[in-house]
Every structure is written in C-alpha cells, then in structure tokens.
Length: 419
Ligand SMILES: Cc1cc2nc3c(=O)[nH]c(=O)nc-3n(C[C@H](O)[C@H](O)[C@H](O)COP(=O)(O)OP(=O)(O)OC[C@H]3O[C@@H](n4cnc5c(N)ncnc54)[C@H](O)[C@@H]3O)c2cc1C
Image (cartoon, rainbow, N blue to C red; front, top):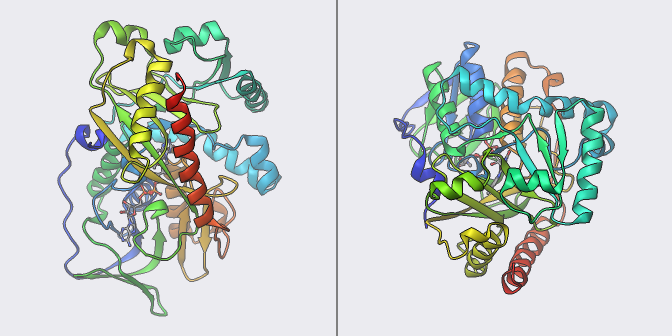
C-alpha cells in the first residue's frame, strides 16, 4: 500500500541531479524540514547555499509523519529543564513553545498548500493513570502561561466523537498539516529565493580540505566553507546509527461519508493517546481517518500491525468497524534516550542535527533556522540546545530490536483482545 502523503501532496517541479563541480558558502545534506528550513533562511539572507538530497525532497521522516505540529517535545518541560539544566532547558522550551507559530508563519509567508489546520491537538487519556499524567502536564504548561486546557470525559467525547477516553489535553498552539506538502513547499520557497537544491544526489564522501568541505556525489561535487548535516533517521551510510531507530506505521481509510465526518473529530484536531505503546489518529483534508502506532510494515509483523490498526480504529470509532484501508506506510524515527534532539559540532565548520524522537515538524524547522544562523554568524549561542562534540546513543541496536519486538507483541495482544 502507498504512502497517503505521497499520493495527495501537490506536485512540485523536480530538482536536477548534481552533475558538475560547484562551490557555495554553505552545503547542506538532507532535504527534510531541518535542511530545507536552513536552506530557505540562508537563501533569504543572501548566502549561496547548496542542498543535496539522496532521493527526493521529503523522502525521509518529513514525508511520512503524522503531521501533528506540536509545541515542545514528548518530554514535559519541567523534565527537559532537569535533564539538560535549567538555563538550557528554559531556552529549549521557549524555542519549541513557539515552533507551531513559526511553522504556520512560514506556511503563510510562502503560500504553502499543505492542508494546515490551526484548531490544536488533543492528547487523550487512555486510563485514569493517563489522566493523572495529563493533569501534571497541564500544571507545567499553565506555569508557563501556555494556552492548554484539560477537557473532561464529556467534553473530550464531544470533540473526539468517541467516549473511549477519560479526558484530553487541548493545546491551542498546535495544529496539523500534510507533511510532504510542507516539505515540498519549503523546497519550492528555498529554490525561489536562490538556494540550489539537487535530488537523486547522495553524498558519498565528505572530505575536509583545510579551507572547508568537499562533498562528493556520483556525478559531481560541492565545495563549501560550512557544512550542515540534516539526515536524522534517514542517513544513507551503513555505520551504526547515533540514535535508536524506531518504526511508526500509519493506515488511512477512504474519505468518510459526510454523516461520519460530522461526528468524528468535527474540529479537525490531531490526536494521540497516553498509552505506553501509543496510537495516533487524525483526519486529512479529504476526511480520511488516519490511524497510527509503533511498527514496521515491510517486516515480519506487518499483518499484525494492519490487523491491530483495523481493530484499534473500530475500538475508538465503532462506526468504522469493517472499514478497510486504502493507504499504509511507515517511517523511521531517530530516538534518543532523553528525547532531546542533538547538535553535534566537531569544531571544523560542520554540524550534524538529529534525534528529534518523533517530534520534528516544529523542532526541525526551529533547528534548521538555528543552523542557518550558525552559518551566518558563526555563533553557537543561536543553538536551541548546547552543541556537543560527539554523541552516540548507547545500546541502540539492542533497544531498536526491543522496540520492534515490543510493538509486535503489544499489537498482537491488542489485536486479539476486543480492542
Ligand atoms: C512515522 C513518523 C511519524 C512522525 N510524526 C510526527 C508528528 O506527528 N509530529 C512531529 O513533529 N514529528 C513527527 N515525526 C518526526 C519528524 O517527521 C522528523 O523528526 C522530521 O521529519 C525530521 O526532519 P529532518 O529534516 O531532520 O530529516 P528527514 O526528513 O528524515 O530528512 C533527511 C533526509 O536526508 C536525506 N539523506 C540522508 N543521507 C543522505 C546523503 N548521504 N546524501 C544526501 N541526502 C541524504 C534522506 O534521503 C532524507 O530525505 C514523525 C516521524 C515519523 C517517521
């Protein structure tokens, strides 16, 4: 089955393959939100910038995600301040609290058609314990004057179109979008502003030559003073990843009939739940119900995940029992132990940004802009997190297998139970 976002994103004039030896001030590897927002901002500032994408713009997580434009990380803000220190934590929390507004402003400024909704997100309590977690999150957000409200079971039922949840946290800063359309829109805007973007141009070697970087592709090369690596979970190299890879799958129905659309998520909020093995659900602009959970579709366990998705959908929305799926896809998430993204700066005019841990629409846009500022000003204070010289997640391969097996086991049990 096909990726819904690839099937419905507005087409974009393709970008050429790099077939020459060129120079630029800044080179970027990776055409997702991070690389593209960096390229856009650098081009707008008048820098010469080249972005090399191995496949096509938005091929990675940026063309596969759920499309929830969240404010902040999975990790609640108090914990972020404990994990990375009070000053750094406050800086990161403030930057990411404003991330949805930044994304929405870019969409408006560059007329990006990406099914944007601004009605917020709903974090749904799957149990009383989940509700207690939401209350703790609410207190932390209130302390920061965030426009977040806790809906009662009845209020949540009205907004969601299901009585399954014990309550829900509504974040008015957030929204949803068509992920690939947003990536393509950023690419188009970067190109319109003078950035040179190339597709089908995998960087196979990056060599420091004393004055900067020489990036080699199969048919060309780029020489640049500064290098931004923005490959997150989709790097092409075969070396063990610096993060833990975790897969997340989604399935979409055909557009729902009007009488169901009036009942199910009438406000169009994007949703996810508090369960340890979480689920997400939302509508797209055409009224397809999209349900997601941890899992990989082109691997053993694929049928378990599809079966779970159908049963989970029927559990949440009984009217959708027996409804088939027209689209199914998955993507790889770069998870870090503390769920905080990392900036690696090796001291040779090269930075590498990764580890969004499933929260990359707002953060990727913010970190991409920060990378552009670093290239423009050579100043580390622009980074939303302190840069580190090196980072590698411990036991990432073991943890990846644990997540994969855990998802199959959880979905197998979940699929056998009524829900
Ligand atoms: C299934 C799923 C659901 C998610 N849901 C959400 C969500 O609802 N909300 C949210 O905020 N975030 C979500 N995320 C996270 C978000 O999608 C990512 O964090 C974000 O897209 C990362 O953007 P990026 O630009 O850093 O990397 P990517 O979008 O992955 O882009 C990296 C690019 O680098 C290219 N590349 C790699 N190696 C090379 C090379 N050697 N040469 C040239 N190019 C190269 C790849 O082809 C790829 O296109 C989700 C992620 C997944 C996978």
